[in-house]
Image (cartoon, one colour):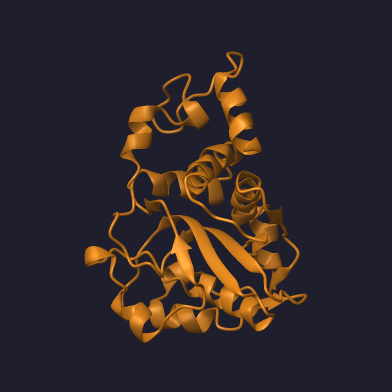
Amino acid sequence: MLSNLLNALIDNCSFINQKCALCGAADSQQALCPPCRQMLPRLPAAHCPRCSEPTPDSALCGHCQRHPPAFDALHVPYLFGYPLNGLVHAFKYGKRLQLAGTLTGLLTDFAACQACKYDLVIPVPLANERLAERGFNQSSELAKAFAVTINSRFSDDLCWRKCNTLPQASLGRAARLRNVRHAFGVKRRCDGLSIAIIDDVATSGATLSSLAKALKKQGAERVDAWVLARAFSPKT
């Protein structure tokens, strides 16, 4: 894949002295040295095939049995824990844009190992107010690299966020679902398309489910969610 070739060229260029984003070691591939990369908290192999919550024997979790999300599957390589959570926070809120390559590399390395094909790759959109405040959409950076890795089409103008909803991090599961129930709009029909929606972190999955529901209302046949890390919210 083109992205993998570019990453290899950059990583092997002696004039680019990349330091590990965590420990500062020099000559680190994609700005993470091997020991620090090994420290990243992996999602357990046994997890729900729908929402990726850890479950015994990879069984469908109780919540997905009772209230299945609108997306067909959630694919995620890591848990949202130390030290990955610090990198994500520094990128999103600390404006450490140099971490974009590190974080996108972690997601695309995971995607490159999967046999995935989609007609379209889209980021979870931000509200205009949030975009103006932050200056960029971190999900767009991940989605662009993801689309290149799987040789698919990227679009950041198909969907929009109708309003600046409350931050999901401050809410429980039920409130998260209410908060984003009608948050997204889709500009045109998606009849028969298989679509990947990309975000940085999933907790309850409410945001991803709301966007997937809007896409399916416009005719999408399958909608999978891909995120870098999975966090977990209270079950209430």
